[in-house]
Image 1: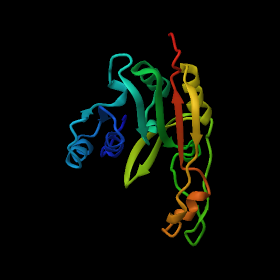
Image 2: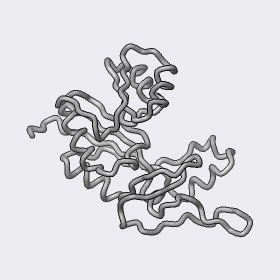
Image 3: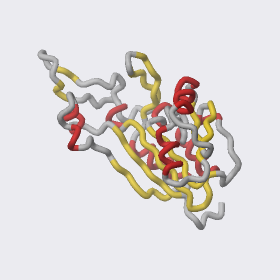
Image 4: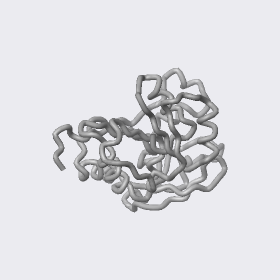
Length: 201
């Protein structure tokens, strides 16, 4: 799990029968919390940026990442690493902030005089690269890329695209403040790809 945070997906993988699970994150605080939330001997956590990780070829059957790829400057480079780490037939599944969400930069609704969301700004869509956004009161650096960039990097590496989803909130969440507005534009993108089992590269 690349950018494993509090280890939720690591624990889920173990619960589903994974023999070994490795979670990597750059935040020591998150890793400490992940370890405190569960003590499964099948799960190992390492502190590292995903760009700095090195593993032997064919080390993993599945590589996942949740909402971390938009913090990575060199996405094709990550695709190359994941390709090498996966066994033939291995699966790469990740979510990221949707390109429509990351395009403009500020990542905030345009509001009317009463403070109600009027529309979501989409600008500089094809101008890919660094964006500064405010997340939980802090300025963070993200990297905007187009949908073509994401899919093209996967296909260019040799992956077979197996799924593309723009998730929407569960209908049962519609009573929460602001949740209905999440149906007005996509916030996240979920992609799954497979390294062909007959790969001979």
